[in-house]
Image (cartoon, rainbow, N blue to C red; front, side, top):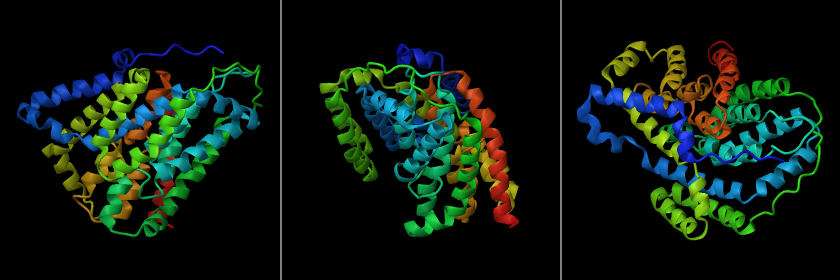
Length: 375
């Protein structure tokens, strides 16, 4: 089996057009209001950045341990067809996203999927699998209060018990997952997954594997207790002492992209023009609130959209439906989309993603609209 040569974070960032777009946008916004530069650090949600950085380190540790390559080979042996493998990965991603948030689910499943590049009778559509995992992360995370950041925010706004929130979002989850499973079955072939030859894989680095796994739960607990920056510092110190090569292979460019996103999107949300447009939409009308939530998510991502709309409406349930549907469509609709697409390391992935995600938004957005306002 031939493994692709690893791309350094600097090389990846240099070719990352999304990063350069965000950077140019920041330059333009700074030129418009240079007095706001001193307030840029306050626009960044640093606990979120620290959590993301820690998860990148831990998942890179699991990936470099070599275990995912062995697990991937076993999956190919157990799954009879390409379609069965795709449905398994979609369901696994959706389930993990309900319990561990959509970004953590992708940090687990996408590296596993990439590791499936082993000798088979025909190449696997790895990029397409990752795209469907991104869709599954958005659909699965819509069910629970802890599935994604926008749900967590709206759950706190609603003051509902955990189970009541889940019941309220259950119809949305079904209207997203059922079409996704149908689309997954249609997008992947029934070709048998026959291993061309059993590849001699390198041994698993068990110390790195168990260390990375053992640190997951404490790190997540500390982030839930609002100690993400301190937890990240401890994590970095541990890997710096024992596994420096892991830190060297982490996609630090993704951290920079998220920092730029926080600054750019929040600067845009502060513009009087943006606030005037939202204020004049007439969000007291439910249909307009629903459509505005989807549209705003396409422009500034669904988490900032949820926070922005909460300033104009107390209808948390309809807002949740709108911004979770808005996670589909353009890649900016959900930060999970960006995480997954960056991990493909394929330029064509951005185009292929929209070929599936935009029609999926139209179909599911229409179904949810009918459920809310017609049926």
